[in-house]
Image (cartoon, rainbow, N blue to C red; front, side, top):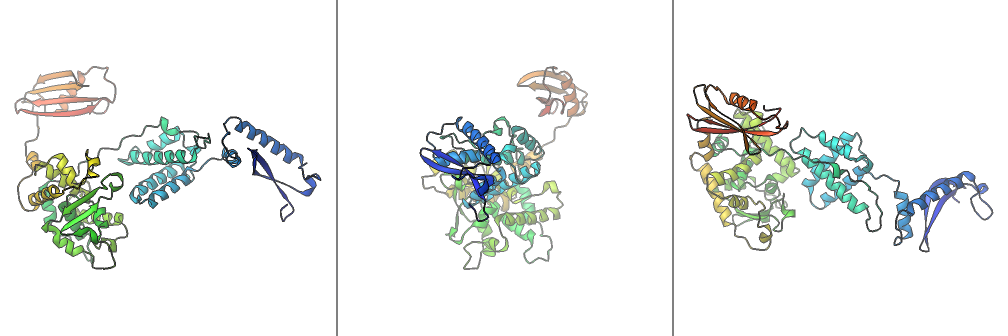
Length: 483
């Protein structure tokens, strides 16, 4: 009996000579009890009897031989209780942060936020996650470049973790009974546009006068300086500059682990890079004078997180781009100079793809071997100095610049044109004639001769040769859109 005189009603579970109890929402008073404390209220008895029948029916469908009484009770209680996916996802994200995966956790949080906005609730339940719901959610992402792949993958990983943690397959305790991802096709992210610029464009950027500013620490100056550090340290990431410790820089060499991949590589993504003389003044300019601060640079003093640091760097770079008269679509970012380093190293300095990957601290096909040998980073230093010398201490035209100076492919009605169309590698149309003023006229003529059985939205290759100029171009068009 409680203090208010009521008796709460429980259902007793007995299994393997042990007992436990399941609380109901029913109450009785002394008047509803017999002298031996048996319940005599007909409504409560009917409710409990029906509930006991349901419990027995559920238990008869599973093997409870090796369960404890407590596990039986938990099975009966949770069997009808839907689980909140949103709550579990937030718990999963918190665990990622505790493991030091802050950047990945941010992507998971963005994915969860988008799913909740789509569902119209911050309490998305596992029962909501049907294949129909998930497919419609993915459709809402189709206009994005990267999120349409990244967000579903993040949420699928959360779902997988939940099934592994909450379902007890050994004992048949299945709390999450469905898997919508079996009937879900996750689209691929759009291929990343090549961000690299030419050495000529680099020279123009770093020699351009900084826009005037009244700020004590102008963003444009920060953007230019950090872009120079990225370019002259083999494309180092801004997060690694932000996290650099004083102990990481000695003997004129920086020693660090690449934050993006260190947790996923046997070698911890460890790298050593000799600092070239061209950016030693920048090291002196930004080195932290605070003895209590373990960071090498003052970036952590002026910016709360590496994300805000990167955002400010990119903002400063954009200010210079605006001053140079560039449009928004032409803007550079810190990553532009990482891509540029790799492109110049390969195109203009004769480095192989594996040499570029090694110097940029990319994972390679030898990642297991890298985990247990002592690596000599000298080749990476030498390649880095070649790139710096080519960009800043020469006016040699780059390979890309020379290619851009080559004449563009043009047609005139006087030129002899040979055109071919290919579908799945098979030639399906061909022409040789004059009288075409542009490429589109040639493609239209070839398209009119294509077999009708080519399905809509299929890709067809068009190879067009200006026979008088000895120039050939290839175009890809989609049936129903390009022709």
